[in-house]
Amino acid sequence: MVYSPLSIQIVPWLSTAGSKGSTKKQLLSFLKFKSVDQLSSLASHLIPLVFADGSARGGPCLCFANGLWVNKSFPIKPSFKDDVDTAYKAGIKHVSFQNTEKARREVNYGQKRRRKALSLRLFLLGQLKRRPCL
Image (cartoon, rainbow, N blue to C red; front, side, top):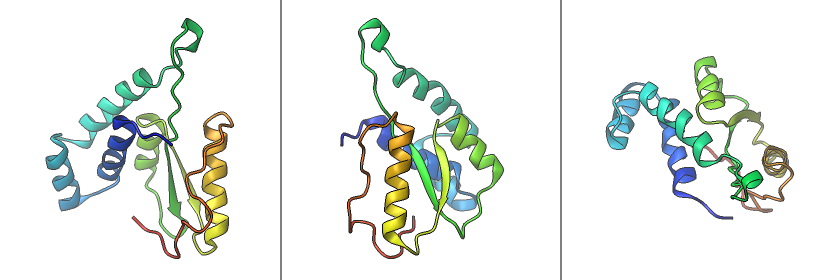
């Protein structure tokens, strides 16, 4: 698996978009953005440009496995879901982490479907620990 600078950058951007209060302020300061709207605007312009399918013109077709899996017990605000869907071209899926093997399969299957059936495995057997939480 290869991680591009943009795919790594998306993690703190999504974290900032989903945060509030002093955490949001600190993340925005660290990332050098004035607001989540500014951050989301950049993401919504940059992501489609970088990951455009250029194969019809003989260029690359880069795959971007971008998704967010949230414990079923955590609610998701509709505004955050909209931001994740539109600006970040990702999806949010609620998963039960009680059964770690089932959660691992759901995450891997979700990514396989999202990336046009590429054989992508985010978590190998035994890698997902008992109580993962970010």
